[in-house]
Image 1 (spheres, helix red, strand yellow):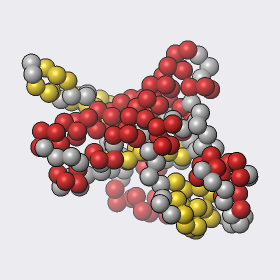
Image 2: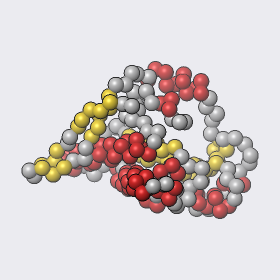
Image 3: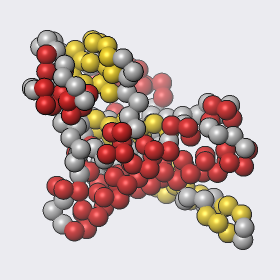
Image 4: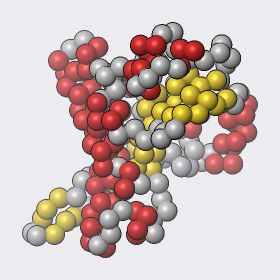
Length: 212
């Protein structure tokens, strides 16, 4: 629900509130990625930067633990969440060079919450204050986040080096004022199927579906 403000922003392709919707959204993102891969292959380019493609896609999952198969209450739900995590892993492995970035948020980033491939392929990590060194090591692979001062927004940002940062306070009014120029009325979303081999050539199937 934290991302509901962005549902009608023109840059948003789709938004999901339930695991079933998440699977459809992730599948669509994966198929878009495969389409981009096919375009690069035909152009003889290794990545979007070499091809001069400036378009980028961000797949943002808030509270990724909601897609944890271990917490499923039925066999069908478990398979659905496993499928979600499979798409997440594939996007994390292949997405960077194709202009697709996966952003995952969780309150406790253990291996059973975040798929291993996603964690291994994370270029950057942002960790706020946690209760113990163990929790810090889960996210950052080292201590430190447990020693952060009790100041809202204080965090550790880690790439090749570690930096202590102060994130800004963003109110609901700030969000509304910022996104207001980009709000549009949405009636349909483009659904893309992965490229398929057909009579020796790749084909893309694009259909339109209504937004819920």
